[in-house]
Each structure stands twice: as C-alpha cells, then as structure tokens.
Amino acid sequence: MMKEVLLTMQGLQFDQQTENAEQIETVTVADYYKKNDKHYVIYEEFTEGFSQATKNRLKFSEGMLELTRNGLINVHMVFQENKKNMTSYNTPFGQILIGIDTKKIEIEEQEDDIIVDVEYALDVNYEFLTDCHIKIHICSKENSSFSLN
Image 1 (cartoon, rainbow, N blue to C red):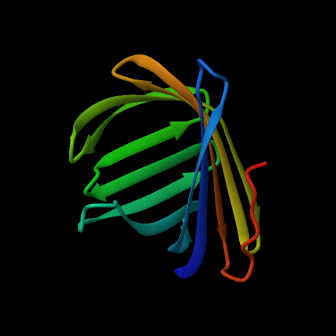
Image 2: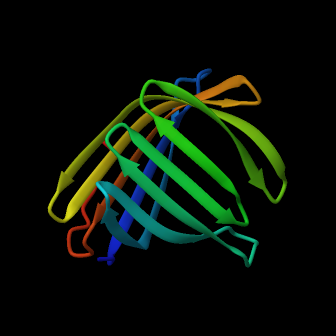
C-alpha cells in the first residue's frame, strides 16, 4: 500500500581546506511503500531556471541505499556500506563521473517514522572531492520534527 509522507533530506558536505561544513536541506511530499523488505520513496524535484521535473526514487534496505533520478538530471547512485561504487551523473551542463565510497548506512525504523543516516566520501573524475553526510527522514505529515544533529 502506498501512502503520502513528508520527506526531509539534510546533507552536509565538508570542506577539507577550511574544516567547515555546508548544510543543504530539502523538504517535500513523497509517496512511500514497502515491498519484499525494501523501502521505496518516490518524489519529484524541480531545478531553478528549468521547467522539466526530475523524478526521484529512493530504494533502501539494510546496508544499502539507491537513488535513481530521471528527467533533467539522470543518475543511478548506489550506496553500499564499506564499498565504493562509480556512476555517471548526467546534468543539463554535461556528464560527470562520480565515485561513492560509503562508510556507514544506518536505518532506524518505527511505525510512522524512518531515518536513514549515510556517511560517504565523494570522488569526481577519480579525485577525492569531499566527505558527505546525508540524513533522510520519512514520516507521516503529522510527525515532522527533525534535526541532523
């Protein structure tokens, strides 16, 4: 059964030269369902200056998270704990080869509340770019308080 949820994604990208972190947050309504012990979240995203939407699908289970984006941006990102995955990130401005070296994936699941916590290193064209931390919160619309800290 699919249900409408509130999806909050918070990300931190650490600047290696200054030791500062840049925080990015996205909050949107999404559709959620669970099938064969895998969680699915589907939502659309719009990029400023473009009319075409990007359809996103998060799929996750113990030790793994996949993000598939189709539309203005096309990519299939695979986060597997203690494994590095390479993928091609296609944007309106060109294609980038990225590497995702996942250090940690934790999933906390309660009745109407799921938190996915991912730490990884990001490479661009085989060169280390930054360490990243993403926290994904999926909850019923009534239960919407959330913090990355």
